[in-house]
Picture 1 (cartoon, rainbow, N blue to C red):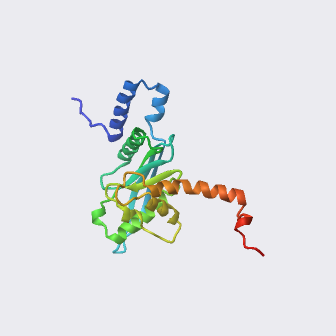
Picture 2: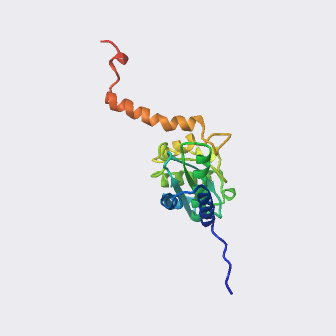
Picture 3: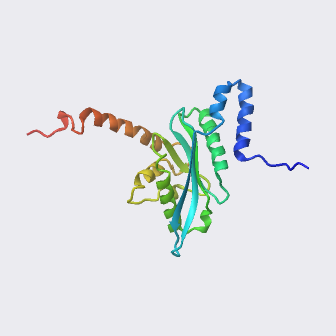
Length: 216
């Protein structure tokens, strides 16, 4: 007797994509690229708890497609999260951004953790460490995170004075206080700012123009 198995979240997302692709007559070449995620990162990182013990957590960051611009997607803290679900959510974010004409691709991040069981200090330590682990993918012109299930702007804005400050500043800039799932003017400004800075630096080679200098 055959045992029925339930389709995974990512397989379900792929099946729905195939159905939509049939309706619009998408070519096989384009389908092959859009059915899979572009990049997936799995990290295992230790966090010291309030009682002095160390717990190792598993997290992910997945980028589905960045053809339209930098990736965009929330970070989820939930004990039942796995890589398959994160891949499905990243794919769905691509379709959401495309449907409303936003110049972003789809991404998603997650940590397998129950945030309700952690203290504020432990949540802060976990967020800092997770941010440092995925920093190789994160940036205003690469991938812009935001809060999602189990996270909020306060969690995302955890500060430090270590090497994760750059990653955390990106998290803070992409976490608007009222509508976490939508890009804010702040996050879009941060996206454009590095380009302006690079142009100024390249033009003046670190020196201000003559009109800015003090006489004498």
